[in-house]
Image 1 (tube, helix red, strand yellow):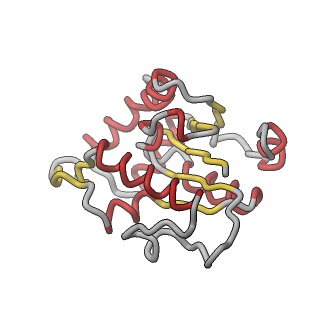
Image 2 (cartoon, rainbow, N blue to C red):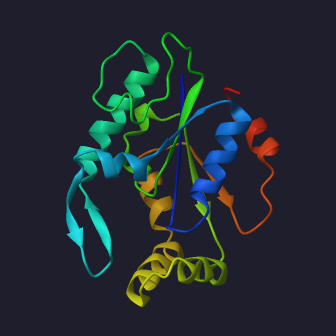
Length: 181
């Protein structure tokens, strides 16, 4: 089974790319936002940034369990019915995990880490459209400027493909570059 993670700054195009890739490659899509909402991986709430505080160690544990469930669908997991959409004995070609936190997964569980990048003006427009506070917009623009997700993914030892979401994305070209497709 193959595991692709898609990471990048908030608003950089992760979800759009993840869903298109999943459809093109016939992979299962894992929405980590939904997983965070229904599992016990939050350690509180940041009122200033208007978001949950995610315990990355707990999140990784849940994601690793999900990966193992995809590898062995008969394996029991409390989130099977809510996150996994595997029908009995269905063979899974792979999964795409969509989250700006996905690059924290140990590289041994991941075949490819796709990092989305976005032009700053476009990113700022996207974040304003979401009605984020000035502080939250600034934090996310800084994350993009300093390539936080890309640098952390490199530090974790991931095999990385960078995609610029501000430019037209050719999903067919991406899928041709995947070694296991």
